[in-house]
Length: 352
Image (cartoon, rainbow, N blue to C red; front, side, top):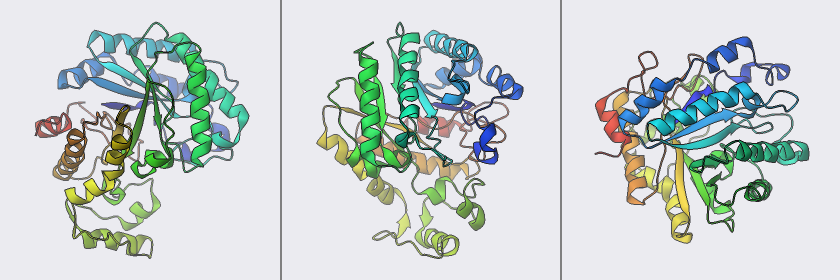
């Protein structure tokens, strides 16, 4: 189970001025100190999940001068102790780094700025120093690298791994591909000479379904229509015709269903067939909260069926959403924090 909305996605940066994006307010800290508690971790464990992917932003861990916020590290320490108490493994995920906010374009890219890259590497070596005694925490270097030259990202990932290895040769380190971890970009992922490297991808196809009527996406907001799953292929074509003035051809498919999903995920199967000695992990997939629950369950079943058939471990997104999260992907009720249905729980756990 992924946890966003606590130390990442706690507010939407696209509505802030550039000067406000690296400043935390008293309201932010009040949120950090109260949003997730031990009860949430206990509940996730009680549902049957075995690990949590915790997303956090670089700006939450460091101030404008690069100094580490020790009060946030105390929260991370609490989170680790809760997970240990309830038998949950941990992935620490840098969700948004300076120069790579997955959902907004910045004036300076992480991939083009050596100072930002050096800071990125220093952050991860600091994390290793802080958690060197916690052997079972995996480090996911960066969530959803934007559409960049894959050679630039592979180089930065390699240098970061090398820096961590000078401290700890056994740390599990997770690396994703470019274009927001799109599975069809796995072909560009460098396979590092490192037995403790793990590779990851995300799954949100068809985007017209998973982000339907989403207020953060201009085309989905403009089209403003329910998108069923499984769904009539013509409705999906109409989305592109009306929103983009360009009808997208889903060649060879009469309906948006399991057959299409398996087609989209085929690059993940090809990756593990080409690299049988490495682990591939689907680190994030989900659907927007206001899609009908029966549609969400049907979509999850098809994705998880593929993952289980190909022995790909996975992490669902997302536990809980903040009120101002326009992409509310929550799997529990945002008020009472209980799973939306027993069928959804069993589906997420692969019990169908």
